[in-house]
Image (cartoon, rainbow, N blue to C red; front, side, top):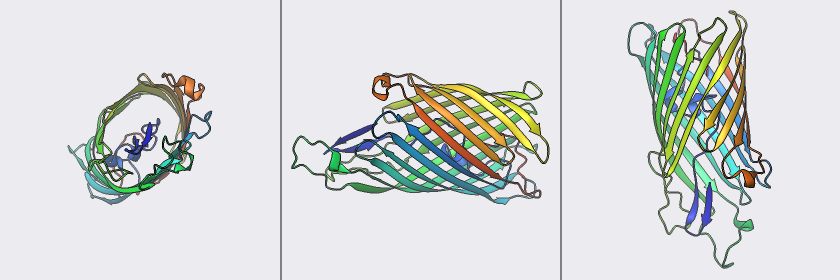
Length: 316
């Protein structure tokens, strides 16, 4: 949502419907929090392609393990991310870069219960092109067309695998903790509100080659609320030491807003994601029934045999 006027220009945070295709986008505590040495992810979203200037969002992430203890009970990871988002006839957009650091520790000696704490520091620049704006008074002008501001995020994540067939992960994060000033007029105090996110994903492998993966995401930012819930089915097609392949598909609902269908293909070190976000809200008339298409790719760097985390959670 975008509001333009002399009082300022306001927008919500960048977001994707593929909530955990690249977990670091959701919570900095997930940086490096997996069984591997590193991970690189790309994601692109095109929303409402039927309008003249659709919403377009792209993200790039990279993460790596810096240190693992000899007993695999503790570790430190680092990650970086870059986002670009543009929308509307005014080309309103935000570009941001982030650096994340996460530390994990085992809560027991069995390697099936971990807690991770992450911090993310970033810098963003937002701006727009007023040449296409329709002002009531042509003499009115904005004091500035771009604003720059720092960003701070904290995250906490918990992973637990009570049995070989069941594992769960839960994360809590707070973005925009510093409430940066994003005013364009210089006359007001327009701030980007903190965004609180609670995320939970589980995988239950109830069959030899098939598992069920329910998901819940709750977010709040200012007066906006989001509730997403759904489930995926994952087929394990190959699980050899030299060859891995799986197919995953599912449906999720963003309550009162969208129906989300996804397809995820895992092939050895690569994960390819496809997602269609079908709008079912009152904005259907404006969008012409066209929703949002997301595509992504994740490349996993093989783990070191001497420094494996021994975490059996999903690779992404």
